[in-house]
Image (cartoon, rainbow, N blue to C red):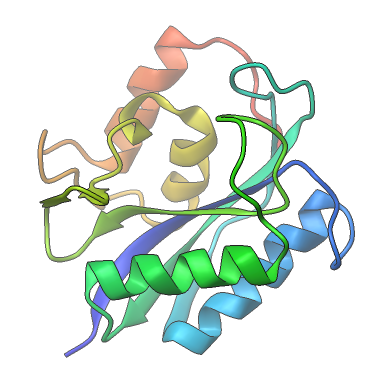
Length: 163
């Protein structure tokens, strides 16, 4: 039976599909090979996190698939490699970044994968796109909706996010 996942999508480096916004759109299309993409958020222009100086194009998608979390993680890593993503410096420039943020199955904890994504609750570049497509999805650990988490994150971080 299919389950739903919220996938965060980000890029801050041009690749074979073009500028970062085009990479994000191409990644959304690539997710369709893994199941049914039921919603996509607008693309937000966001400030870099960490040492990177390049702005990011960030979005999110809801995906229904029969893949279990580890199989989906492997498929997402394969898409990243196909886009030219190489492992490197944390928070550095990247052609594409695909992260499982939430799962309709609740929480998942294994060495290689933790759902919900450990840092999503404070990251506006993840929450703002999620609110656009899944405002009532709840964090299984806190019980808060993505909308509630975004309001909290906005109070802490006053920088504007530009869709």
